[in-house]
Image (cartoon, rainbow, N blue to C red; front, side, top):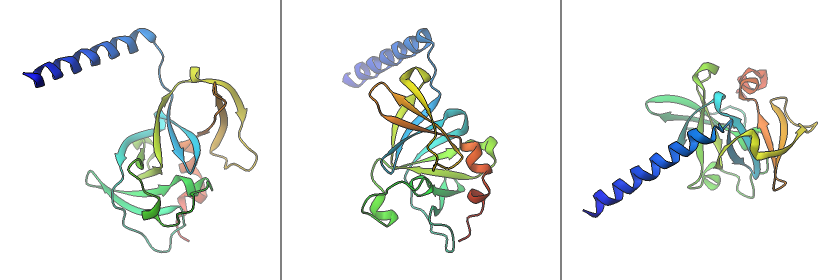
Length: 178
């Protein structure tokens, strides 16, 4: 009986949240993630499915940011260390095994981009819309060209917006051989 009551309460809460989401009319534009201590925004239209961390098979003679390949739902995906690609500080740990936590996730790229790859992020921070940000700045001069701009939220935290399509079209990204 308690299970039925619990299920009914869950259904009611979900219905209320869906109704509230429809009435607010605010749509999320980005998936917010943390990578090497930096906050990043991945456009939802360029992102795919989110997977929990899964064992990765290393691939020799590749760039340091190319971790290897992973089997996700029966398909092989290249695993890209987004922290290394951004030259973000990965902390004192040096090996993949030392950096993986229970919050580590693999975010697949949208199938329309034509690249069978996932981005390794340290943790998910939710969804964000344009209303969540108070200011927009240019990307830092030393940032890769696929970091389009920096958005600053009401708390003063800076978020780097990444253009995943520009990333996958970057010749350096496509050349994984070391």
